[in-house]
Amino acid sequence: MSEAPLTELPWYLAKQPALTNTREITIIGAGIAGCTAAVALQRRGFKVTVVDRHPQAGSEASGNSQGIVYPKLSPRDDLLPRANLAAIQFCRDYYQPFWDRGLGAQCGILVVPENPKKAADFALISQRFADRPEIVQSVDNQQLCELAGIPLSAETALYFPQLGWLPPALVCQQLLQTNNIPLLQADIHSLERDEDTSSWELVDGDGLTVLNSESVVIASAFDCKNFVQSEHLPLRKIRGQITQLPSTVESQALKTVICGEGYFTPAEDGLHSCGATYNKDIFTRDVRDEDHLTNITQISATDPGLAAVVGQPKIKNLSGRANFRCTTPDYLPIVGALPNMPEMLEDYAILRKDAKTLLPTRGSYLANLYVNCGMGSRGLSYAPLTAEILAAQIAGETPPVDLELFKAMHPARFLIRDLKRKRI
Ligand SMILES: Cc1cc2nc3c(=O)[nH]c(=O)nc-3n(C[C@H](O)[C@H](O)[C@H](O)COP(=O)(O)OP(=O)(O)OC[C@H]3O[C@@H](n4cnc5c(N)ncnc54)[C@H](O)[C@@H]3O)c2cc1C
Image 1 (spheres, rainbow, N blue to C red):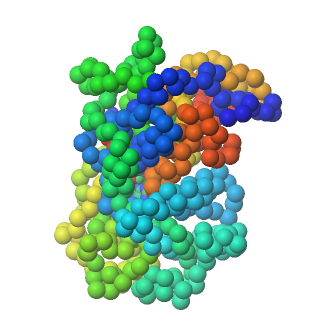
Image 2 (cartoon, rainbow, N blue to C red):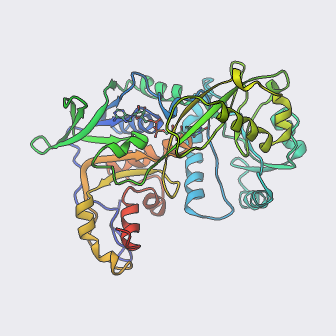
Image 3 (tube, helix red, strand yellow):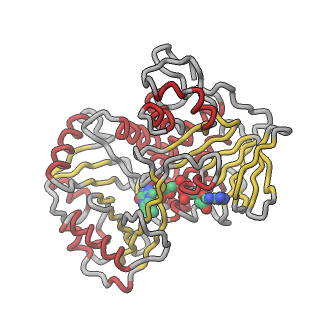
């Protein structure tokens, strides 16, 4: 990245360049964030190893059988919808080979408005994207029923023709397998710096060094909090449960994903996935009947027509899966170099007095230690792009997003904001 213009504080530029002598890099976490990062780095010539506490990739949040490539646009040009737009455009191409070989389906997504305010926003969104129908189109009831293949009640919807669903666990596994990226099973408890070899030691629960690596990417979702180096990140753990509903003769005709209060997928092997719940104070992975009920209630709230084709499933017989999202206060992912907190706090202490100060001092970052997490409810959409941002940063390339988006997803953004707001 080029020198910062003098008009802003260059906190996002590192004082010391990354060392890439051995080009060895280890990624902790084999979810969608870790696996996409592994591929992006390997493509740039890095020797990548992925470590996960499970023997198979995609065993935690990235383990559902059907995940939606979620769009979240807005009539306004705010950072969040801009990031989402960049992400869905990037991941559409990224996932094309998966869809082409029959994994999941690029079946299109219909988003029905949840309330009149959303309907008004949707009208403005469709105006904004009027010349880009490949991204999004506004459809009326007749069109949306034809696209969905079932009778729906919504009067209008946004249609994203190039998006769809994927099986996240299989995507993770295939990303590693087809690129011959090794997956090592180990539960990493700490990262110790070995200054003699300029490398990181990945230490397990017995205090044993599992491996040494010149560079490390922490892609362990909420469990980034367990490492001293990333514990400061403001992550939240939000439980979610999906419900798998047996298809009916009528529901089998569904051709697209439907999103609204919740989401509902076309049937795969006789089962639709629907969900998902949000609980911030429940930390069990047990599948709960009350959450099945919430998901089923969301179907009717999304569209009564959809509820009609689903029928009245018996809660007791339903299967599902529960896991945890890792969310951030601004709903944007966190990707990039991890700040050296004590040094940054000292270097930028003046921001507490004058938030507009323009020091020429660059940011201080931990040597060759990076993070890729905070994917929230949209890991499938964000991970391919954040992986590319990360790999570009490590390889010293220009990032694939503009500077504003780069900073909006940077791990040090919270530190700078909090200093300016005198919160730390
Ligand atoms: C119910 C539910 C439904 C969802 N639906 C969708 C959807 O439709 N579309 C969508 O885009 N997103 C969806 N999400 C969100 C999505 O699942 C996440 O955004 C995404 O999976 C996060 O990927 P990740 O790689 O960051 O985390 P994970 O997939 O959780 O991967 C982290 C990995 O790190 C490993 N790990 C952690 N700590 C350590 C350690 N110390 N040592 C070794 N390994 C470690 C874990 O074993 C895990 O494999 C949903 C989430 C939930 C809970």
